[in-house]
Image 1 (tube, rainbow, N blue to C red):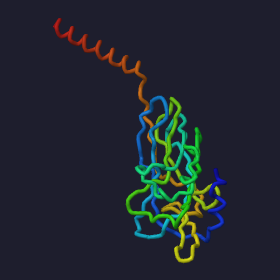
Image 2: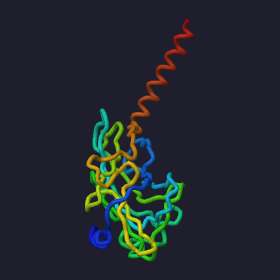
Image 3: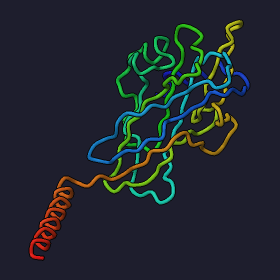
Image 4: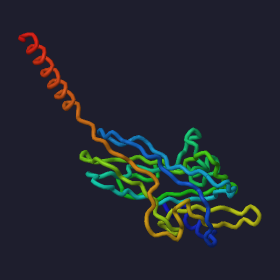
Length: 227
């Protein structure tokens, strides 16, 4: 996977520059049943009014159990948003989309995800104040999974970090940049969202609860009639 764009990207990179591109995965609650989760998106938006254009990006994500979480939550798959309705920032100017590789790119289960893309035809796209998608992920979990799991981005501008690059349209040079709160010279993973797992009883469990409730209700009615 890395051979698709890492060498091209890294040969263009110049010293780091700060920029406040906000990276997030919305906090969600997953009511756990058999099978994988729904699809979730990692989004980026611009809260500073900066007009630099995102020409390439790389995300390195990991799952961190929080507090008293039990069981195992993992990435089941990860891919670029490929449909126009998915609101991908580089839609129509994507090196990977143009190559049409098999989807999804990453297949789990795995505790980490490493994925990226670059603008193929131009200088990328400006990051607007409204959210645009960068990555979509699915999760899988063991049957005993319960609790809160943090989704975190690993900082850094190397082969295993999270960063983006912008082109200077005047001289076609590139600069690596960290996402907001995720500096390229950072060390510790930065939480960008949470998945809360809530177990759902199996169907026979619901039937048992209904039977107990019905029996209790019938007993109450009989007791009242006898009284």
